[in-house]
Image (cartoon, rainbow, N blue to C red; front, side, top):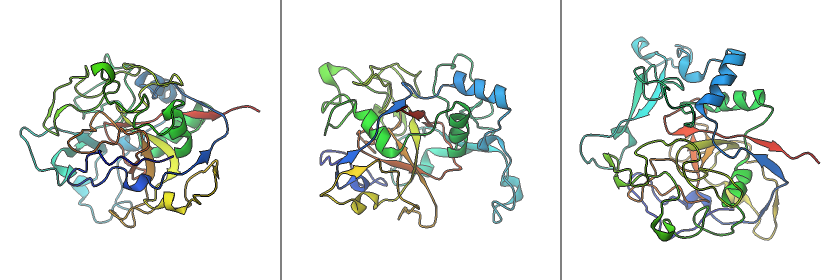
Length: 301
């Protein structure tokens, strides 16, 4: 488990994309089931209709939650990737992310967007608790970080990607990632400029789709940048379930959960986090239009 890739891009504002995925260590996980695709808009819609659930992005923030925010800023919404009209320095993600009033899973790019024709696209703009609520309704759960990586590797050990070491075997794109000039121009050479329907690319060796690229996926674990350093290199970790708390030195005091798999915004020019062992993280109440999830379930013994 983990990744070391000296050839991976260390983009401005991103650093080494495998720094928090080291040292590589041995892990054992019990058998489990994993959804073959990310949860789709169609599936999430069934959950909402059955339960009346309201996602975090659809709830109006309160002054108690954000005591220092101007009242006019307390509006329901979420963050959306907006490509700038020209090349920009890569030192701040705020150059391409903006908070949009009305953005939610129903309106992933803002209030003027909808889901027509996007039933088989991954649901996005979901916070961690939204993913948990769906999983509970479906009699499933979120996978642990160790389970996600085991599943994503598809039976291959020590490879950069879920399909091997070559990003484009036989010149074929194997995942939905960013081509062109990040962040202002996605050429869509892989067939998709932006998010793609689930299962648009070949599955890995376990029959799982989009375990690299397309959308980031919430997993169960708290995020600590130093978590892997806690493992004994002489022992095999048995079903690790993540640390007891969270620490991200880039934002001290902000608790985060792990995200895995990378997204359609991962780029060789910025952050190559479609590497199978690399890690992402996010504040649990936040969503974005490149963030979704899939579910797992424990195998019956």
